[in-house]
Each structure stands twice: as C-alpha cells, then as structure tokens.
Image 1 (cartoon, rainbow, N blue to C red):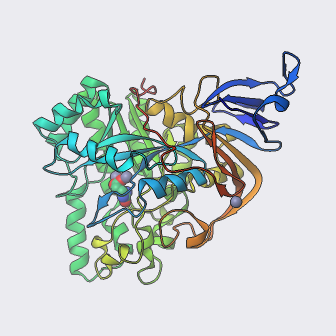
Image 2 (image 1 turned 30 degrees about the vertical axis):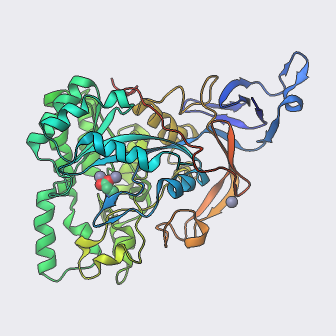
Image 3 (image 1 turned 60 degrees about the horizontal axis):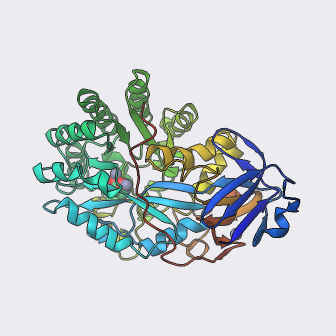
Length: 473
Ligand code: URP
Ligand code: ZN
Ligand code: ZN
Ligand code: ZN
C-alpha cells in the first residue's frame, strides 16, 4: 500500500474547520492528526510515500454531484459528455463522485435500462459513480422492478411531471410509484413542472411566431413549477413517500418545500448553480439564437422576480439541502441548433459538472454561505441524502480518500471551449472569474488532478452501491 500525507492544510467539514494533517493508506483515510504529530518518534512527512503540502489551503471531502446525465438520450440526440469525458471534467473541478440517471424509456423493461447504463459507464469513469433510476414507464412490471433496485445499490428513482409523451407520469402513476417508495424507503425524486399545461403554452407561443429560446422560459412559467411541486408534496404526504424535488428554480416552489418541511414532512430539494447566477433576461434572452445555450428545465427565472436571492436564502436555512448540476450538455453546433426557429426543439440542458465546486465557493466569498455550509451542500449532504455517508462526504478514518485541496487564493477563469474539459463547444459560464482554485484531487487515494494536470485514467472510477438515505427524519 502507498501512503500519502497531506500536511499543513485547514481541514473543513460540514461542522467545522481546523488545522490538521491527513494520512492516507491505499484507498482510505487512516488518520487526521494534529500538525506535527510523530508516530513512534518519526515524522510522518519523512516516511510517507507521497507528501502534499497544503499550507494555506483548504482540505475538503471530494465533491459529490448527485444529478448528472452523461450521454443521456434526450430531444432526439444524446448529451455530449460521455461517462469518460464527463467524469474527467468532474475530476478537474473537484468532484469525485457523480450519481447519474439510468433511463427507462417508455415500453422498455426497467432492468434492461439499468443494464444498458452499467454497460455505458463500466470501465469508462474517472471518478466513482452511482445511479438513480428514471422510471419512464410506470406499469405493473416497473413497479415490481423498483422493489429490486436496492439489491442493485440504487435507492432513489426519478419521476417526471413534465415532458408528456417522453418521460411523463400522470398522477395515477405517480401515486402508485410513491406507494412503492413509501413501502421500500426508496427516495422519490421528482421533476416538478406541469407538463401538459406547458405543452399548451408552447403550442400557443409558436403559433404566435414566438420561436426564440427566450420563450422556453415563458412557457415554463413559475406557476407551473409551484403547482407541480405542491401536487408532488401532497401525493407524498398522502402516501408517506419521502420526496426529493430536483432542480428547483422558482422561489414559490421553494416556499412549498419550506411549508411542507415546517409540517415535519420528509421533503427535500436541490437547486443548481444556473438558478443562483443566471437569468431569463440576461442569458435565455440573449440576442438571436444565443439563448439556446441556457435552455434547461426548469428554466432560468426572471431577475425582476428575485428568485435567486430566495434560493440562496433557502440554501442557508436548509429549506434546500444541496446543490447538484443537472449536468446535461448539448453542443450548439448539431444539437442545440436543431431548435432554430422552434425553441421547443432545443435539447434541454446545461453543462456545469466541472464548475460546481468553484461556483458554489463564490457563495463563501460573497458571504452568502459559510465555508462549512459549502462543504455540506456540495459533498456531505449529497452523501447522506443518497446513502453513501461514512465512505463518502467526510474526511475521517475509514472513509474513502476522496480529497480536494482547494486554494482560496487561487483564481480560475472560465472561458471559451478550450479552458474547460467538458465535451462541449461553448461554456454556459463563459466570462465567470472564480476566486479560488482546485489544486489537487485524490480519488480513493490516487492523485488524479494536480497542478493543472490530469493524472488519472478512465476506469479509475468504480460503481458505488448506495444504501437507503441517511437523511430522512
Ligand atoms: O434541462 C434539463 N434539466 N435536462 C435534463 C433532464 C432533466 O429534466 O433533468
Ligand atoms: Zn428533470
Ligand atoms: Zn436532470
Ligand atoms: Zn488551474
């Protein structure tokens, strides 16, 4: 076994920070030590195989992005990042675990879809990965198959109240699936937007010649996010299912979650960096077809309605528990451009898997969240929420040595195509100047990024079997 000694840094957890050295043996952390500790009279810095000097830097548990869509088939094409390219980009950005979605299409056996995703990801990943299951066809067979998911290391499944004719489930299907969720303890994840109502608005806008990307945001009005979020909460309340609402963007949806949580319901929500920094007017409403870069669902919200402030606030008060990216990139050329002249044909999704840790760190810089909360919403809570805590999400003896050394005095410029590592011909984050820099990344003890060099290999990342959520009340 090779040993690695990380010395001189400030170790940050969800609950505090302090000067500590970290000793890694093989794939695991074996000790957190007071600086200067000697073992049997010898200095660990002199005996370890590798010594990393983290003086002046933060030492944090590797990021966990619990919502990605590598190669996802969507809108007549596939997300442009594969498991290979997407997890490599994740590594560059200090994310050492992703949870992606196995997609059951309508008419397909659930078990077959999961096998397909294992085939796509196996041997390809730069960092560890788990799966949620998308249930795109709720029927007797898939309801029964959901009961077998825990044996596969999958403890959460996603339903869609949006996208009629694609992934959509009606209320009857949702009710049945939630009954299984309540019965098994598997977490129901919900895409909460009223799809049938959105489709009417889309049709009407297009008929009026309103075809620009901007109208994607008009059709997917906040009322339809609030309504669906409320309906999901009520169905979860009725059935007793634990509920996790994905990609929350509207302040009114946040209020629905907060109210249900105040009643003691097992209801949780994530948001994504795009809803904290980007807007309907400034990005989706960019001139010409440019706005297509930021077409995602739920959509970017109006800056005049102050959703961003409320979403930041909810992150601080734990009405929202964590931040994932919903990484689902599509290139402008050959993919997003399918929607020129019809915004509804623009594949939905933004690529951010590389930037989540940096973008959320800006909340620390601006004083919106604490350093500890940064670690909590990007790593510790995702680990607890999705049944990986202990092994992931924490720096402690016995945990996987998934470690990021983050330089608060470093700087990261997010620029054009060649300054990021995602397989994407543009950046939704172009022009963002980041205070802070991911210096070194260890995945299960192996240094995979150091000093702006990628040192890992595809296949380094292994499948993570998850337990039931450790977050439920
Ligand atoms: O626009 C998005 N969010 N694309 C990915 C699919 C989804 O709904 O999460
Ligand atoms: Zn979704
Ligand atoms: Zn998604
Ligand atoms: Zn750099």
